[in-house]
Every structure is written in structure tokens, then in C-alpha cells.
Image (tube, rainbow, N blue to C red; front, side):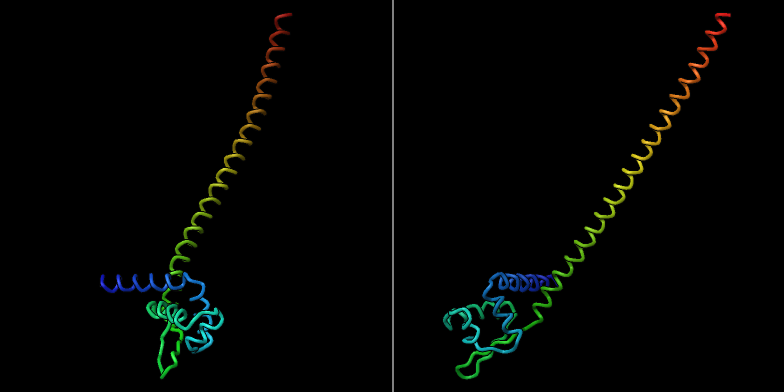
Length: 153
């Protein structure tokens, strides 16, 4: 089991390593249209057969390309399985991070709602406090005036 995981990791590393080069990515795009010779893959890049062959070798080692030799012709075809495995790896982490970002959005929304609720409560308390203070002052003023009136009688 562990051996299989190590092999899968190494293969995935080779896939991503081979995809790191723009020439190899372009070659894979070309091969998505069908089988091509190494010479045909080399043409758009103005590179030698040997140069293109080195790129194809890296793609082969990553399991992305299958090369068949018929006489002097080296034909290459895309092996989409490895790309699907890389895509599955990306898909897992896309779902992982989307879930985390959804959790973060929920937390921020709740925090914002709590902050607004607290602010509204404080505003209401301040308004009530001001009203109570004014009422108390009015009552006290009335009581003071009544006491003053009684004192002058």
C-alpha cells in the first residue's frame, strides 16, 4: 500500500514537473488533436529532432505521452489518464479550499451580524439612557421646585 502511494506521488511529481515547461505543455496541446511525429512536434519551435525528442522523453517518463516507432518514424500520442489524475489532485484541493473559504465567509457574516446587533443594542441603550437621564432630571427638577415652593410657604 505504502509502496503504491510512493509510486503515485513520484508519478504525479513527474507529471507536474513535465507540465512546468511551456514547450512541453504546447506539445501536449498539439497531441490532443491526434498522433504526431517528433519532427511535427519540433516544427513550431524551430528545434532539432534531438531537442524535441528530449522533451518527448520527459513527457513519456511522466506517462503523458506514448511513443511508437515504425521504421524511422517516431509517432507520439497523448495519454490522457495522467492528466486526469493531476486534475483529480487539483479537484480535491479546489473542493478543500472552497469549503474553507465558505467557512470563512460564514464566520465573517456572523461576526458582522453580531457587531451590528451589538452596535444597535448600544445605540438603543444610549438612547434609553439619555431618555431616562432626562426623565430623572425632569423629575428631580420638579421635586426640587416643589421643595423650594414648600420652603417659601
